[in-house]
Picture 1 (cartoon, rainbow, N blue to C red):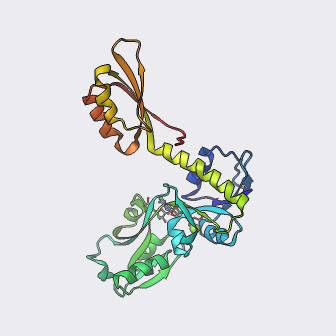
Picture 2 (picture 1 turned 60 degrees about the horizontal axis):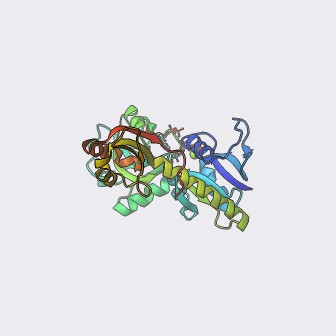
Picture 3 (picture 1 turned 180 degrees about the horizontal axis):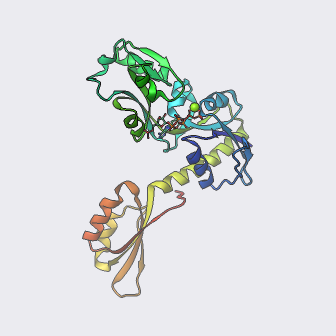
Length: 283
Ligand SMILES: Nc1ncnc2c1ncn2[C@@H]1O[C@H](COP(=O)(O)OP(=O)(O)OP(=O)(O)O)[C@@H](O)[C@H]1O
Ligand SMILES: O=P(O)(O)OC[C@H]1O[C@H](OP(=O)(O)OP(=O)(O)O)[C@H](O)[C@@H]1O
Ligand SMILES: [Mg+2]
């Protein structure tokens, strides 16, 4: 049985559980139970505070975990990282009160900065050759300037709405983060095999998230031109339609460029274009 540590409640929780479920792994959740076993995969899930996850994985209390890269690097545990998971994307940024005449990082020389990430911030300031006083606080960092605790803050930003609500302006991006899967380096062969199976499923889910299945109708004389626009997994499937002289083409397109491809397909004579999500994708 492999032990997975995930955040009990917070910004990582929902998507961590969603990923495990999309891998076809079933388990029963209850807000009171801090440990559950999957009913169809050799996995036990521990629900923890995110800050504790890297330490537990390093000590072998948990075998694997899901945590933000910001926490992992802050705790000096980046060697545990297995791979990025593509959710809980955010950045660690410096911000000052919006009326502050900030021009560049040298304006923070000798200032007080409140943060929950003193090591990441110190590394950034060192790199820029700036000396400042770092005040470590564990939460509600955005309040610090308005209560006279610091002239600037360094905290997690995603949409930026918390900064705006607190009259702050983002001035420097210190670190880019997303959720990452971490693992203990000394897993035995049995646990490593379970992890490999889990990774195989995660990759199938991730590939599917980036891809769309596309179906369209085209006159036969346009098939070659349209096929060129549809790289697909190999090459498009072509099926004859009941109507003479027409075919249906099926393929896979990348989410990032499908709008552009669709414009080109229409211009090339494609009709009845359908784009549908893919649940799993194995190559
Ligand atoms: N607004 C956000 N958007 C996207 N990701 C975020 C956001 N805020 C934080 N994160 C990411 O999610 C992780 C967990 O954030 P959260 O705010 O839930 O942590 P926390 O309050 O320290 O939780 P815990 O109670 O488990 O200690 C952060 O370390 C960061 O990687
Ligand atoms: O840029 P935004 O989209 O506004 O997000 C940023 C906020 O999100 C996180 O806090 P969260 O809401 O998770 O609360 P917390 O302080 O309890 O961690 C983070 O600490 C910021 O305060
Ligand atoms: Mg925390």
